[in-house]
Amino acid sequence: MTALIAGTTVTISVKKVPLEPRHRKTIERLMRLQPAIQRTLTRVARRRGRANPVNQRGGRMWISRIPATRCVGAELGAKFTLRVTPKIIPDVLAVERFLDIA
Image (tube, rainbow, N blue to C red; front, side):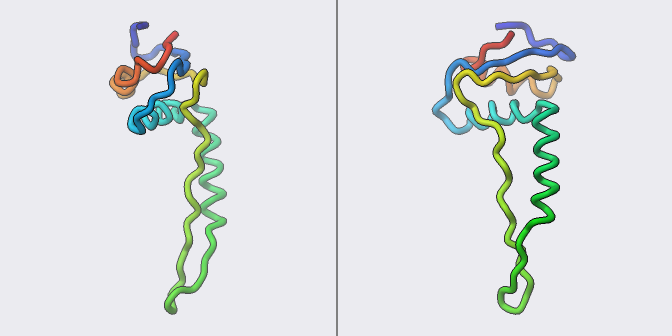
């Protein structure tokens, strides 16, 4: 276990895929904190917002929203780099048994 100090940058890899959905979701949420992934999600969300199909239901306009994009997955060997903040330290510690922190 590497000490997580706020303000440092750490590289994290998934050493074991969690079976419980709550742990898998926590790891995926941490992976989505990478700046490159956030840029991708923002760009895709902007495009998705313009492309929602509109049709008429019961005399009113109905927007069928397109589901959000899943661009990361908690897979064995997946690596990601994070800047440690006090807000994410408890999340990392909650799933540290599934992660290698360097």
